[in-house]
Length: 387
Image 1 (cartoon, rainbow, N blue to C red):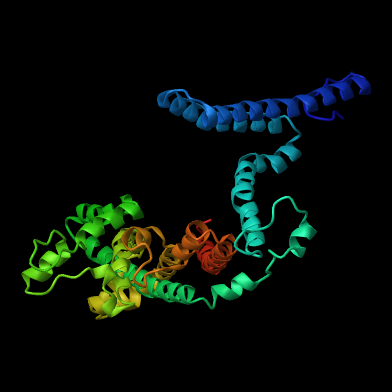
Image 2 (cartoon, rainbow, N blue to C red):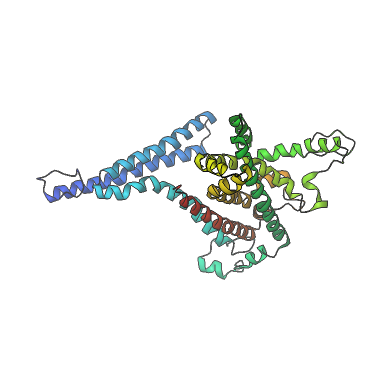
C-alpha cells in the first residue's frame, strides 16, 4: 500500500515510494514555511516602513486578508492529499488551528504572564534573573497583592460600584429591552421603532460617554444651561447640578453613568427578545386568550416562561459587559467622585501609578469574576442548541 494517496504508482519499488514520500513531506513543510516568511516580511513592512499611508493600508489589506486566505488554501490542499482517514482527522484543525494559536499567543500566555507579574511588587519580576532567583528576590510578595485587592479602600469602593452596575445596569437593560420588544412587535412602525432604539448600539462606549457629557453639562446658576438635563431642571424651577459629580448623593451618582449603558444595551436586548417572541407559537397565545387570560397574564405566564432561556442569556451577557465596564466611567469622571470600578482601578494602578504587581492582581481578579458568568452563558447556549 502506498504511504500517501497519490504518492507513487503501482509497480514502483519501495525505495522509490519512500523517496517520493520524503520529498512530498519536505514540500509540505517548505510551502507553509515560505508562506509564513512572506507574511512575516509583510508584518515588518507595516511596522517599520515610511511609505505613504495609502500604500501601507493597501499592503495591510492584501497581506492580512489575502495572506490568511492563502495559508488556508495551502494547508487545506496539503491535508486533502493525505489518506481519507487522516484528512477527516486533520482538516478541522486547518480551520480551527490558527484561531487556537492566536488565542494561545494573545490570551492564554498573557494571562499566565499577568498572574506571574501579580506575585511581585510594583516593579514586577526582576529582569535578567532565573525563575528560582526571581522567587527568591525581595520583589516576590506572593499573594500579598491579592490581599490588598480585597482590603484597599478604593478597591472596596470599586467592588461596590460594580455590584451597582450589575444590579441596576443589567436589570434595567433587560426589563426595558423586553418591554420595548413586546410593544414594538405590536406597532405599525415596528421596523422604524426598532431601528431608532437599536441605533445607540452603533456608537462606541467612548462616543456614548461624550454624548452624555453634553447631556449632563453643568453651568453655574444664572448662566444659560447647554446641558439638556440641566436645561430641563432649570426650566422647571430647579437648580442645575453636575450630575455624575454630585457627591451629596454618593454613591448614587453612579446611576447617572449606569443610565448610559442601559441606553446602549436596550437595543441589543430588544433585538434578541423580539426574535425569541416571534418564535412563540401563535396557537399557544390564542389558547391562552380563549381560556380567558388577559394580556398581562399572557405576558407573565406564557411569554416570559417560553423565552426564559433567552432572558438568562441576555442578562448574563450584559452582566459581563458591566463587570468589564471602563470606557464610560473613564470618559465621564475618570473614576473620581466615588465612581471607580474594577477596570478603572486596574488602569490607574498599572499605567498611572506604575504599580505592576497590584495592577496585574486586579486584572486577574476581574478575569476570575467574568469566567463563571461566561461559562454559565455558554451552557445556556448549548441548552438552546445554539452550537
